[in-house]
Structures are given as C-alpha cells and as structure tokens.
Length: 462
Image (tube, rainbow, N blue to C red; front, side, top):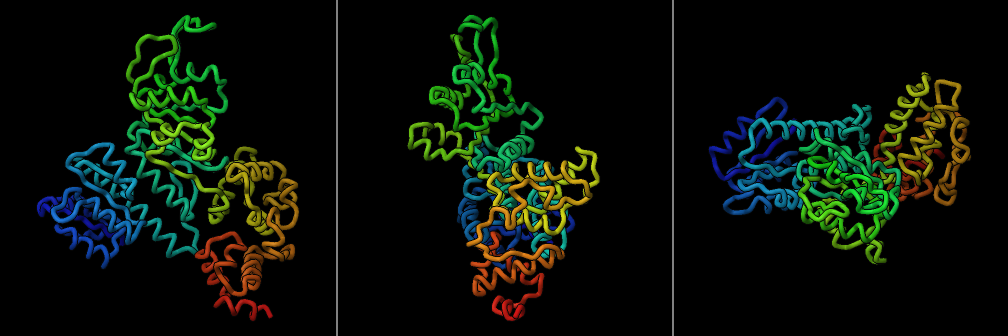
C-alpha cells in the first residue's frame, strides 16, 4: 500500500485534503505540526508528502530539505498561498516533485496524486518482483526501468509543468530529442506547437533570420516579410537542438529574447512580445566551451535554470533487454517479418558491447540484424561485423575469459557471474565493475542463480 503524509497547520484544511484525496490503495497520515509530521515520516516512510509552504515552526522548504535528506526518492508536493513560477522552480531544484497553488481544485490535486501513486506502485513492483517481468516502464515513448531512468522520468515530471527555459545535456544517441518532446507533451502548452531547430544544420549568416525573422528588403533576397521560429512557436515550445553550435553573435541576441520575451525581426524598427518556452540540448561540454570563449556564460545560466542529463546506455545496461525487444518489434513490423527475438548467444554478445553510440547505435544494430536475418530469431551472423568477434568491444584485460558457444542464456549468464566473482576474489563491487552492471544487479543475479556467498562461487565450480 502506498502512503501519503499531509502536513498543514490549519486543522480544517487538513481534514478536507485527507477526505478529498482518499482512494483505494492509499494510506493517509496527517500532522498539523512540522516536527510531528517529520516524526511520522521517519516512522512510516510514506512515498508521497504534501506540505504547506507557510508553517508556523518550520517553513515548507525546511520540511522538504529534511525529507530529501532522509529519503531523496520521496515525492514532496508544496502547497503555496502565493504561487509563482520562480518559487516553483526553486522548490523543484531543492527536490520537490511539484509546487501548487493552495487555491488549486481538488480535482487537479487528485490527478497529480494519482500519477504519483501509480509511479510509487511501479517502483514497488520493480523492487519486490524483480524476478518477474513487469509491464514495460515507459514515459511518453521513452523506455527504461533502471535507476537512472526512474531518476530521469522523475525530473521530467517535476520540470514539465513549470519550466520557461530548460537545458538537456548528454552524449549523442541518448535520446535528448525524446526527452524534449516528453517535456513539451507534459507541459501546460502540450496542445500548442513544438518547433525544432537543429543549430548545427543552419548556415551562420541565416541564423538570425531563422530564429527572429526578417522584413522585406532587409538583405539581398529578402523579397517578403518572414516570421522567425520564435513567432511561429508563440504560445508553445521551441526546441534548440545542438545549442553548443550556435554562433556567439546569435547567442547574444537569443539571450536578449529570453530575458525580455521580445523578438525583433532583422531590419525591423520595433520589437514585439512573444510567449515561448525554450528547451535547448547539446552533447558538448558547455563549461569547457565557456572557458574557450565559444559559449556565453550568461546564456548558459539563463538556459540551465533546470538541467536534465540523459544517461549513456553503458550506465543503464539493465534496460538493454527492454530496448532490444522494443526495436525487434518495431523493425519486425516495418520489414513485415515475424521475429521473436534474439538467440541466447546473440544476447550475450550484445550485453558485452560498450555501446559508444548509445541507444541510437543499438537501434542501428537491431535494424540491420532484423533486415539480414532469414530466421525468426536474430543470431550473431546477422549482426554487424564488428559485433561478431568474441566479447565484442570488451577488453580482454577487463574480462579475461571466453564463454563456450551454445547453451542457454541463463547458463551463460550464470557462468559469467561465477567467473567474474572468481576474478574479483569474491569482491562483489569489483565483480560488478568487470561485468559493467550495478552492485545491486549483481547481488540479484547471485541470488537468482543460487550461488550463495561470493566466496562459495569458486568452490562450487571446483
């Protein structure tokens, strides 16, 4: 059962909230004093907390900081009498899941709580029933069930209702564009336009015209007035992909637009107001670009009020099988083939690869294999040539043993775990590093294959 703790200094508000939010599968705890509320939190560890921002003995922000310090995974919603986007973003940066106006309807609050209850139930399912395949965790087309992805989903949900500017960072192929679209679809302007500009694909001399528009006669070839993307995205979201490739001169003008919410067409005498939410994304290290004078520091701080980092595939290897299944279904349907999945040895081979191209590389690999296979199972000969060599791109020094061909996937996985533990001398942290998985994942596999304590693994194999 999911638990909800409500902290409010007004007893009548406390009762109304508890009654309005009551639902099957939700246990509700209440406290009118922040210290009493924190005591209840420590004793019962509820997954969701609603607290008034203005409390007598301690501010709601103080309560939030104490709760996040104890359990950062807790969903905390702040209720403010005087709501502002700035205070909401500040609360979210400190770890709040949401910040709502106290005058918000019970229906709005029930909807937010319902989503958090569902999220908490999914987390509980994954932690308690890890040996069973749960429903595919997905957020607006983004697939993942690893801890890094749960964290990413949480940050997207927290930022989407409130952001004005937002920065997405991460390596090429990690799905920054999917994250941007998810944020837009979860934002209050989801029904409005989502406009995309790839900054690396625009000729430098045309940047200002593309973004801000121009008037007739402002330069050679300007035969008529043209609105820019800011005007076209008015009321919606503008996604500036590869922002690190934007010229410095354009960066300065973009900063002015973000500060003033006004755009002036090239050659125009007057500026006019626009209402646009801006999401920027880059695979560059912007701090290094700032040091090299290739990116404006003031623009970085304007964009990164909320910053979301997309994890590398190597950091979320737990999601590999989910993503493989997704792409197999996708390309099977696209090519009109009945493909059931991958052979055990092909799964092992892909699990050994380091995936420098991230999810985009995996999509390319499965797409190629689905096209090449003449069977209903993808096998090693169907993969790209560079993946057909033993152990893929894993260095022999890091994992100096080769699995025999054939056998079930479970048997090969068991042998991998045993040999990694032998190589690490029973040290689970080192064995997890060798296998490129988390320590918790290794402990689960040790239990799954009934290997007992790490020291017993080598004895069991003789």
